[in-house]
Image (cartoon, rainbow, N blue to C red; front, side):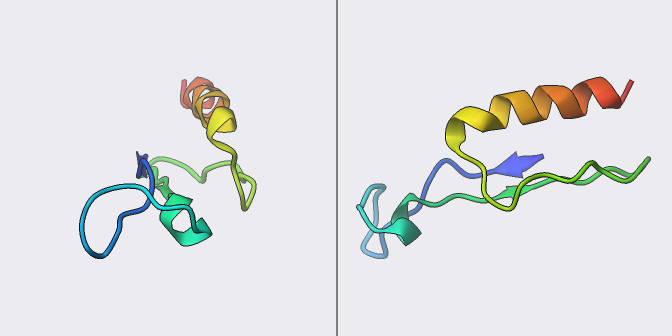
Length: 59
């Protein structure tokens, strides 16, 4: 899994208040099996639980 913390300003630095500056993305991949479906949009506080559930299914 790869994810970003939040957006970046063109002139440098972090921050900003627009949706684009506040959004982040996540990529998941497994060479062994198909991954479970995740919601199209995930709130930051939901990510840890989704990752733990995914980890349990790998065993």
